[in-house]
Image (cartoon, rainbow, N blue to C red; front, side, top):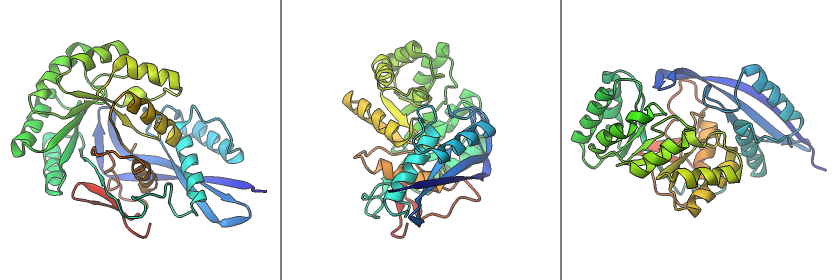
Length: 337
């Protein structure tokens, strides 16, 4: 009889440089790691990352409540985690890792075998103009063909000026922007028209989540493609997911497993979107290299040629060592993972 045991530990990661979003400045990132093993084989351990972003993760209210739920989970691995997507992701990864021998292999595929790289976008964080310009030049020099710039923290005119500099530098670069819900519904369309003049590929979450009718209207009138991101968070049943996709009819959806019901919840979103011919791409929720590796492996289970949002492994001064490699705008895994 198999007897599963579990434990967890917490680690705080520190950003190399404070990173800005429309929700504020990030200086550190909290994550918990769940480890699972069979009592009869204690040296083989599966590990998964439970990663949260305060103010965004639907299952994080306080450290005390979160760790209490983790303690309960370690006592009972069959807990219903519907309302705890980050814990579900960590648990699913740990179980799959254990099943594959405790070697950081969540899925045995071309990515984990070192046979496939995944195209990613280069992320430019919010900040003052000079800082953002410095990041833009570095991403271009590093060989990225797709750049994603977070907008909504400085004035819109300055952001347009920065995007124009990028566009003037190269007409072939693919430019994505992420507003994190920063626009008001009343002026969102005018801002989308201004962005479209710069041949922007897409914009993530132009207005705050939960305004389905306003978002539906934007998606029907927009001159550039809209990708839903925060809009998907907290929607956990198939019927509601279907209703959202069929009401809003977005051009893209963006998937963060730690926020969307783990691996199984993400797979369901993909299935529902693909049935409706809605393309998607995967993005990390600032996980450490452990969680990022798992998301890369999940992404590689699908044939998706769009650049993914998986280039966050170099954010921290104290990230967990990894064989993840970012070169020429792609991420891959070395042979010894």
